[in-house]
Image 1 (cartoon, helix red, strand yellow):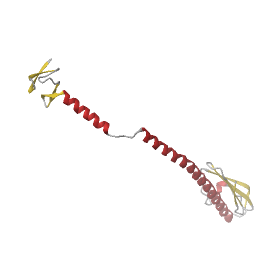
Image 2: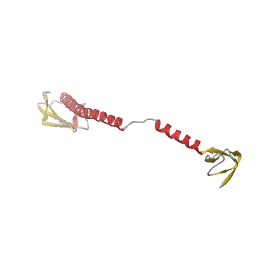
Image 3: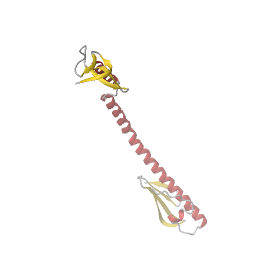
Image 4: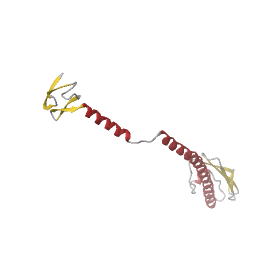
Length: 171
């Protein structure tokens, strides 16, 4: 097969796919609407240079990645138990605050009606801010002389009880 070039190629105006003039393999390439000849060896060398350039860009080795995973897993092994412990302490503190808040609301109720009987539903009227995760129960007769409030958090393990005198016990 032969093609004709407007620019002319080494060895004449006709180029062959196999060899041209000096014996170098040539490639006919169309650029800007005109045909140009290119030496295949030069094209091959430029491709090799591009390949080597890409491979010379260094990434992370597998050993470096293993070290990163190892360090992150060690940090997680330390941090996760600490997080769980802090969360449990927060649940305990919230339960303690809730039972004291309920006791204050109970005292407010008894200051208004000393002979009345308190219930958990009445405490919100007198300032108790209910937390959906804390279960509050009322024990005893519910009067000023005999009542206990018990609070437990749904995510915690501690139960706080406060009696009519204001003594808080944790169990």
